[in-house]
Amino acid sequence: MTNGVTNVELILASQSPRRKYLLEQAGLRFKVIPSPFDEAAVPLDAPDPYVRALAEGKAHDVARRYPEAWVIGADTIVASGSRLLGKPGSTEEARRMLARLSGKTHQVYTGFCICRQADHAAFTDAVRTDVTFKDLSESEIAWYIQTGEPFDKAGAYAIQGMGTFLVRRINGSYSNVVGLPVCEVIEILIREGIMGLEPGSHH
Image 1 (cartoon, one colour):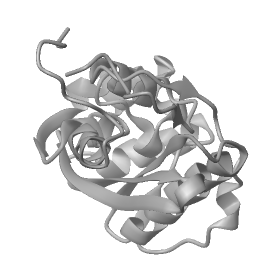
Image 2 (tube, helix red, strand yellow):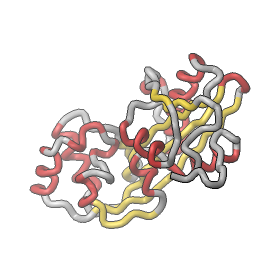
Image 3 (tube, one colour):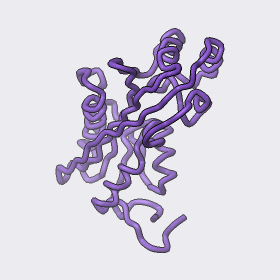
Image 4 (spheres, one colour):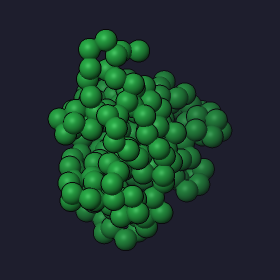
């Protein structure tokens, strides 16, 4: 892979350090410009259309200010049965979420939108991964909460962090659970010529 983008500016409309890390690992060069988009403006819906709408809102918000750039917006949500789990607002909420996920399989959806305002191009998709937790004891839940890791994560856990010990099995894209389905995003970047693949330009 090249060390990045072919003479096109690429912007990640997210302040998530995990999404930034995933794109850096994929060899992309980009700027980080978080979107102040109001997530409460998007009505709750089924997980797939909901994360798509959030990702589109974030991407288009930044793209309006940088019309010549390609912008990537993303949003991740955890679905347990009919309930959507966002980021826990308190220790008690984190405990309830982790207890709900204990011993069961839940779904992680990440919606992403890649858009460029100048030519009205936009590609939106959502990827689903099934994640199965081991049975968690109350003391395991309490220990994990006191690490502080659950608090800015959908579903109150980080699969790439200490939360890896919660996960018995995963079916689908791993990077999707971290916060961005890298395979699908890179496919679009290559297909649209946003990212080049010249021979001899690997790391």
